[in-house]
Image (cartoon, rainbow, N blue to C red):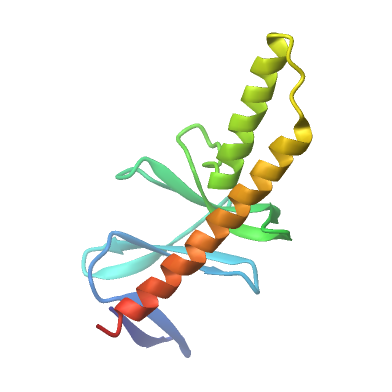
Length: 144
């Protein structure tokens, strides 16, 4: 799937199947690099603002500074045609909860926010657990 090439005295990895783009993000150095297939070779794309738009899927990939999963650092994240970051499942659920709370307040109902927080916490746990189990299943499937 990947082959190591010696280039400029460094090992680089390039996919051997010919995908139009590939990204490398080094979270330890906060370094984001994009490569585009041009003919038979991959060339590095000059990123002026640490974002790269992929027209074929109408999404961009960029570097985002924030707290995610209780870790404050730079993250690689998708963004839409308007430049807005695509919401994570947790952010989507929080947004739904906030809309529901607003609708209830408009109707004159004051929701018990402790219950909302408990349900959000359960959802975050279940989402993380699902991701862990899915990753484990993929690792096990590699042996069969």
